[in-house]
Image 1 (cartoon, one colour):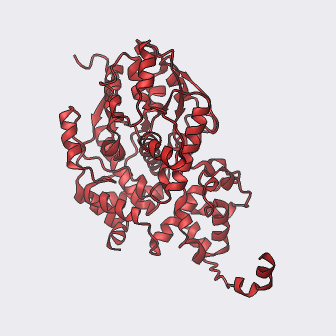
Image 2: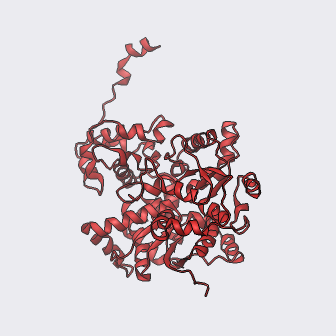
Image 3: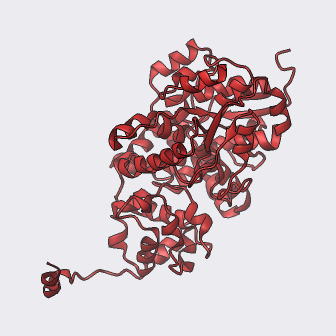
Length: 175
Length: 297
């Protein structure tokens, strides 16, 4: 089987579009600037809890692809969302690359390009509406009262919705 | 006279996960704090810390987070949290806005639209950091009435208790000791186990539950290997993974753990002589009666 694959290389030749401006786009975002100092040692991937159980998520690979300008491969990749944000990669990077934050920049850019996992739309919608990441059911409020806990905070939702709007969250809500 | 011991006052930031799914943590924390002389001042206008939306939009996270900081500034109180995620997020925003003028101006432009301004006058601490730095081990030691000497437990602090170091920096995340010290003040023995500082996986459970559950499962097996009778957590999200999802992991991998998972505040409360009922221990999913029996002897 492997020989056969070797004899038909034409199928593997897919031209990949390179966008030289991509890395500058990443680097101008807050925390994105450290992308340039990654020298591909792999400390991040070897420290990554997700990488041990996922066949697709490798922080070192994602950073290299971003440096090379492979926007079309990086931003739509579902693997981008497998970072647990544990920050072990960031704390261990010998080059001072803010690995987890560069990955967050990439997810933010993916969102701007329209790639948003459903859960994040739900979280933004809930915060926009109630101020909480999850809609707290009425029964919880009642139970608190029964057992003598103070009422839950009731954030001014007009303020919250304004903050969401001013940080482009309303675009997320419309999609 | 209720406040006879009050020396410490904090703005109490509850967050979302605790009231939504882990009220036993709040109930036990309030009881224990009261007895230790820590006064919690409510934050009636507080919103989500912002962490859940950081992957979607960094500025949205900063604005939401900064709004809470402004509320505590108005109260002129430092913030205490029970959730490690809320702690790391608000510490990050606080330090960033205190040191980066460009970002501070940007976020203040947004906050001004809702009549607020970040001034940078308060601090944010997770409970574990506050117990160590503000209350001190000595007072906790003195409050222990019933040392749990027969108990062997393990700890899981959670990534956001100590990472990223740039914003946390009060204990070594590669070999943390504060939570262990706090556990040992109760008289219980805190056991070492393989990969103690690894992540529980909670953050990705909505994206890929297989990855998340495998991370938790691996930790459970390492904890079980060293013979711990219970696991002690200090984060509602980690607690959900180890306690609520434990039976799901047992089913998925055809294994048995039956490892009770207590909030640190429950462990400490027991050592301070409180009853399991007072500490909402019956709300735990994994039956903790094995360890409660041990304590009777």
